[in-house]
Length: 370
Image (cartoon, rainbow, N blue to C red):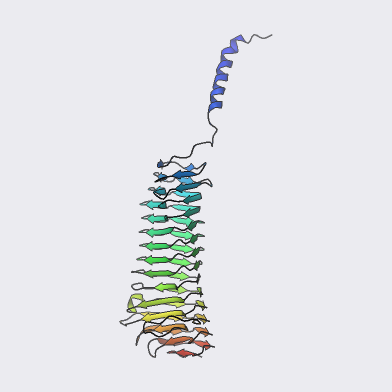
């Protein structure tokens, strides 16, 4: 038999090394980061993380925080994920119970996707341009975009989650559902709200917000579907469906010039209880606007609202403007509205022709309807 005694030391060493490796934790069994950790490399949670105060602080560019299907849970204070670095992604899980769910400050190109965020300020971008929120649900929380350009929300659900945009140029909201939370836009240019559903989620823009585009949406169940306020030129409200609001589109401004260039065109207004459009201007120092190519069907059947001069609404489109106002009214179809298809005082709008009234008890005033 072969003598193995000279191999014994090697066998003992190999056995010892094998035992040492067997004692190490298996790959993937890493512990969760601790509350208050600064993350400098991508991380995946392996269990829920409950924290009082801040949970995770991202301090390096290019990091992905993958929640792994788990939740970061707070106790009413702090921030779940705070980012101070560029090109950060947070994905795949839930965030709830914090004063702030996700907060990015001076950090560009943030991506939030496949998340469910609730409570407090759910999402806040401040000086966080070119950031995205994708396939995410925000419930009972706020979404704030401040001093950030090029932020985009797509395929999201905002439920009882008001959206506030301030100095948020080129903000985009598309293919999303917003319910029971107002959308407020201020000092923001070229914002686009498109192909989304706004349910009891009134949209308003004001304070030097220029060239707002609201297109291809369903806007329903609000007191005022869209409110145009002063110092907001070039707004385009195109091809939307307004249904079941008190008033579909309303502007009440002291002068036409600060909202010059406003276009309301190609929309369908149905079943808005007081009016499809209420356009109020109390003085005229210049500026132009147009309401054209819309359909007003079955609006004003409830009423209960007066214009700025105390006159009751019950119309497809109602204009309480002033003499010489350059608001062109053209090519609108009106049918079965409560009082007038189109109402305006004589010489207070420009009759662009092509307006049609069918089944409106009082026809049209201030423009000719065929």
